[in-house]
Length: 92
Image (cartoon, rainbow, N blue to C red; front, side, top):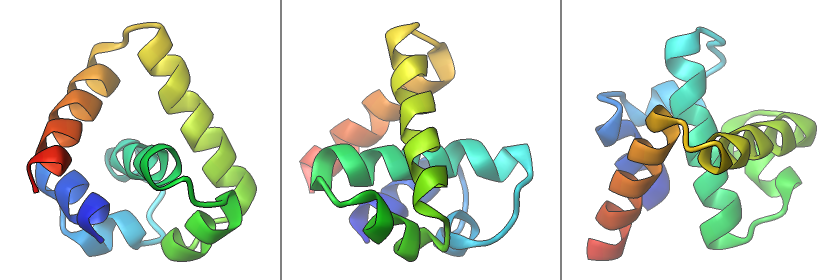
């Protein structure tokens, strides 16, 4: 729940937007970051994360891999979001 709230706050979204069905790019990138945190911080199985976000486990796997790739390639949007949200999660 904290991950969803902190991610939504960072991207100026409502939590429901991250959990919704929309596939607009403006919704997809923040959702990918939230999926990444659920996997890396909570070590939840892909299927469990998929159920939380109303997504298939393969979608979760792909999203997490895309964020990891973005971080490895030092892509600014992913780096900034992950760094900021990580700090925010550690403070609570």
